[in-house]
Amino acid sequence: MAAVVANMSNIHTTGDYRDRPAAGGSAAAQGGPNRYRQQRDAPYPGVLQPEERGISLMGVAGPMPTLWEKLCPRLNPFTVTAILSVIQVIIFIVTLIVGQAKFDGAFVASNSMGGPSAETLLYMGGKYTPDIRDHYQVWRLITPVFLHAGILHIFFNLLFQCRFGFTFELRWTIPRYIIIYVMCGIGASLWSAVLSPVSVSVGASGALFGLLGADISYLVLNWAEIPQRGMEACTLVFVIIINLLYGISPEIDNSAHGGGLVTGLIAAPWVLPMLVPRTNEKLIRGISGAITMGVYLLFVLLIWVGNPGA
Image (tube, rainbow, N blue to C red; front, top):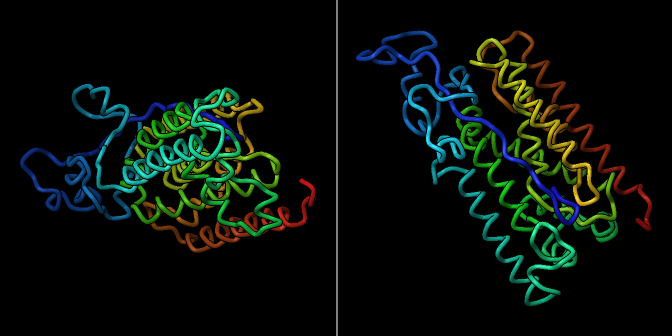
């Protein structure tokens, strides 16, 4: 999410499979928790049982992966991540065309990320609190996820999205991945609308920060089932800190990043799978859902009771 421009640095992660069945034996023959692991040898095995999604992000078993495999592990064009990335690229191209044809150009000097002006981004649906509050343009809470401020902005965001997205779809299932992505994108816009009301903010990085937050909660909930969990947790925390520090700039909307991150942290127990059944699972999900909806409601109220002149 950017206040006119922003950036999301790439994140080190590759896929890993654990406890594969012995050669020549079927997965079903292994019994118990091993019976689905043979499916993971496929580039994108599809739907796995909920208890079988203890997939590590930290390494690939076998030969050293190629650069392309490092950048886009488990790449598959027929996935939500791939389709979403294509849509975002198309919308960015349209944004450049609109900026050139209708406003002050596709590339303006004031945009250090290589893109159009704030006026163009506002026209395309960027987050802007006065329009949300005074003109009830609530769609501006979700459209920023599909918009990007410049070439560098969309490059780094898509690099992160492809680096993590395909694995998260497999780990969480596609419907849960979509729900978390959308919830975190809206959460990022809500926080930005309250904390940075006069900025025009765009970008998927708020939702992408939310994926990091959701994965942290997922690790905590399923700690014993995730391979290389300690390394993954350290990597996630390191990446979050580096990106938040990098975002200390008037051109970076860190309020959106923080909003997406917090939304992912609190919503994940409500949405994401627990690999081992828990006696208090319903309680955990209920508390998570109540807190998530409560935070949403709080920020919606703060938007409409804010300074009318903002």
